[in-house]
Image 1: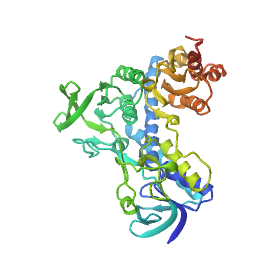
Image 2: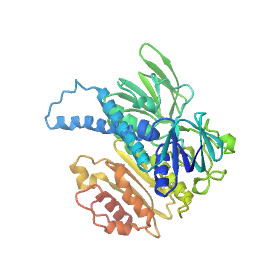
Image 3: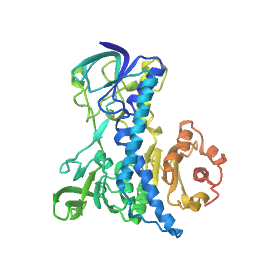
Image 4: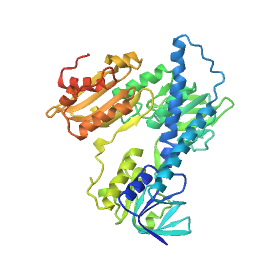
Amino acid sequence: MKEFDLIIIGAGPGGYVGAIRAAQLGLKTAIVEKDKPGGVCLNIGCIPSKALIHQAEKFNAIKDLEKMGVKVDTSGFNYQEVFKKSRLTSKKLSKGVEFLLKKNQVEYFAGEAKFVDAKTLRIDDEEVIKAENIIIATGSRPRQIPGFAFDEEKVLSSTGALMLEKLPERILILGSGAIGMEFTHVMNSFGVEVHLVEMMETLLPTEDADISQELEKAFRKRKVRIYTSTKATGYTETKEGLKVTLEAKDGSTSEVVVDQILVAVGRATNVENIGLEDIGVKTERGFIPVGDYYETDVKGVYAVGDVVASPLLAHVASKEAEIAVEHIAGRKVEKQLDPMLIPGAVYCEPEVGSFGLREKDADPETTVVSRFPYKAIGKATAVEQADGFFKLITDKETGCLLGASIVGAQATELIHELLLAKDMKISMEKVAELIHAHPTLSEGLMEAARMSQGWAIHI
């Protein structure tokens, strides 16, 4: 029986990052993965979806060429080639993770791990391995809803949608969170008729209403059919296609006929069949409860990423794993992530980046909300990306940032300057005074900071 200082179950963004960091800190480390290195993110999530988005944006650029008089014949377009590029990207990065694990001398076990006791794992009912510390990083899977069971032909999960080699003519997407919005962007870009259904009142329901309204305006302009405050109650197969029944908040019903349905209403945790009950680790609402450093109630057993009740984001999983590993290695480290310093990113068009306090939760007596529109930024107008705005929420007394949201071009990149300012408690007065190169989109950050101080120049 092989023994280690640390074993990690799952080689996704939490698992492999934690394993590499552990090895760097001198821990004898093993990792167990039942599928491919990189987990959902690299293989059937973040990375291939971004590859599709990149190709979609290239395809969208044809319209800009046509405005210049260029005639483009798209009759030979083959979506299968787009699919192949996304899979090649995933394969390349998964191989890269495998290489990094080997480089850092992390021992890799292929198979399904199950707890024998709190320090022992059995892999595929065969090999047994042992460690003083074990981290559970088994991730999540697409969540199913009643009436829309996945068959990956008529009713798709996000995994099934990523594996499409041919696009439907019409699709109905259930859920307008990040996954739903990104697939809406991709499908619409390639000419699919998209019906987007959201039970809540706005798209991206966790964001402020003005962010959601900006997105809705952009997507309606692109001819996406949007149904908010609406739920899908079921579907029937007809000669014309899948007839989906929609029920609005007021009880009225309507029907939409499509070729496929994509369910994008969240994720379910992978906590079954790993022996948690055998070692006394309980779950709450599907999540594993953790305390400081992401340790469970069972000493030496930790849980990170999608299996704990924090935002289901790859970068969150990675950072949580780093915290757990640093603690195991005896280093001084923060006890848990500050939820107000977790950036969110949605890669549709326009993009959305945000963190911290939202306007809907802010106290108007103690905070200042400042907005600066993209259309007032020279570069945004020059490159024809003038939709959207920057929004800062600052403390009236200190001038420090409490939260920020950006909807517009490159929002997912631009948000990090503001995140650093919040983390370092830098006042917006300093950001307002910092020279930003001209012309850049980041000048919008500077001007938004100036607005919070009452002296924006370009508006």
